[in-house]
Image (cartoon, rainbow, N blue to C red; front, side):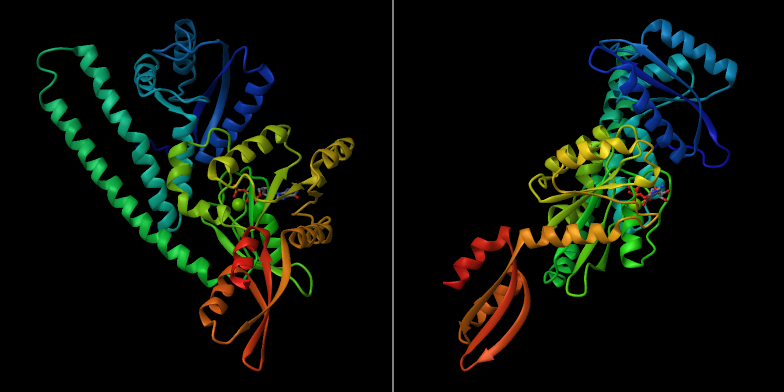
Length: 419
Ligand SMILES: Nc1nc2c(ncn2[C@@H]2O[C@H](COP(=O)(O)OP(=O)(O)OP(=O)(O)O)[C@@H](O)[C@H]2O)c(=O)[nH]1
Ligand SMILES: [Mg+2]
């Protein structure tokens, strides 16, 4: 498995490609983010190179001349790691490692490596290991295909193939074992969530490093780990947050998103990400001081759609306004995003305004209903607790009067039950 030495910062060079579709500015921003990822993984960025190329070389991604130029530089500066901003095929990695005589990583491999060092809970560790093995599996096969092509023919299909087959079998067995384990964890989570059904739930979502954990800490007085590096949070944390004397909600902080988040990771973090899909409302935290914030908003929206949470009502929380040099962009953003608020989580700016916006949103999302049912309908009365937050329950003769807060999503179920 890919591992970066933690002791002593390993030097690396970053590589990106500009083309008709991807401008120099975009690649610059993307490489700046890759540099942050490299730093988070414990590497020191010694240089960045870009090449203008509409179509990547099938064998080496970058052109032959670029490979030679890079090889020379690596030798001169004694650098043993190159990180590509785009995903490479297993064959490209193999070829590049041969030509460059150094370790070659792509963005997905680097992100997986960071997740592996960041994972603390048994659930996160299991999810990351599953993603890593899924990433490794095709590489085991194709690496072999590559070797058999190169050395070809007789004599290469014996022990090598057996070895690969054995490895693949082992990896597959481990994958199904991990999947079973995650299934069990996911079931536990559903039970846990059932236990807190009666509360309104909001999920903090957003690009990595936007300030989600900082905001949750401020609102709940908790101490979720905060760091100016990427993917500080992998495990979801849920806290009760008072919004005003009458209303409090459960707020969940969870893993941040990033451009080109490896799909294996999204798939294996399914149970963690259910905290997002099951939420009543989403609070989308945006780092407004990041020059790429518009692209980051789009990445988050696309990821939410992939997860099936694209339709959940969302408040856009523009964070880090204390770092904003040019305040003139605020009115345009306010117009573009009708549900939004501008805050600074670390400085505590406009937190009251934030809470008011969340309360306003809840008022739109939920209605407070009253229903009177005969005592005999015990089953339906129990069902109500599953539909919404029961605020009051009073007994009158042989009837029970229930005041309940219902999400608009569950309104139909409520009306059916009331009949
Ligand atoms: N200047 C400034 N910095 C902030 C603000 N909010 C958060 N930060 C800083 O931004 C960095 C990232 O904050 P986190 O709360 O860890 O961000 P996150 O969204 O939880 O990040 P991940 O868990 O990695 O997805 C930290 O260094 C925070 O101190 C803010 O309003 N202003
Ligand atoms: Mg966090």
